[in-house]
Image (tube, rainbow, N blue to C red; front, side, top):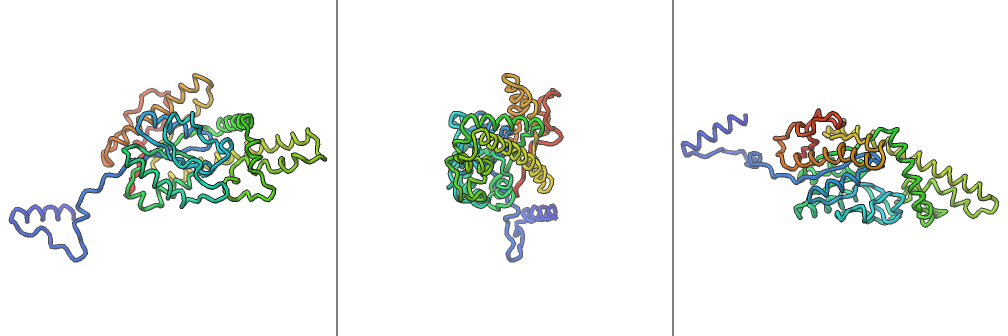
Length: 334
């Protein structure tokens, strides 16, 4: 039908007759080229997989700014518990939506869509690339899939950092121990409230409710120091277990988003980088995560929607454990 109309238009032009006699309410808009959408990169993954690290890696290759999509990191306070990126770790990259919300209020998906949309808009107006990074998949879905305005303005590239769960559990356990050494217990003590509600605000964060019993018994003279230490160790083990449960749920949610919503998500297997230590671990991260992701984003930014490159740009080495059966992960948001 489109070809017939085009032929008719061409024919009528030759004979200098009216182009098309449109019916009432029909406009020429459907025949006009669509406005080019701004590009947005979204870094996904379970807790502890290195989303902040990758977003900063990418921002160092592009003129980019990072928008946090972790629902606990949006709150003020508990920087150790929520594992907020430090000023030093940002490497001077501008970060948005970190520590902006009242810790006693609920920052909803609607709130996130509002603030993230404003942040992404301000970034693109500067000619920079927005990189949305965080583990709260419900936030990402609300923004990318459910918000009509965002869908009409932006085109998204999805990068998923995946780590074998057994390997990730070991890493999470070590990370919790490190957080305890850095002052996690002292930090949570400042937020302890015997009448506190662990279903609202930042007190929902893993690490806060688990320590409740320890703080309630901390000054109990009927309990000796050894008993208090045992209560603390039980709390720390609960923090580790609940963090691992969260990681499993987050991974399942990513797979569900990919299957139910048809998102084309590029998976990067970072397991080797987590298994190795020191320099070897950094090299594996660079080879398996940072370099392929940078190439994905370069092609995503350069190519038009209907001229998507094949994955042949990826290194041929079999040592790069990245899915190459699909083109770069681009979501068309018509």
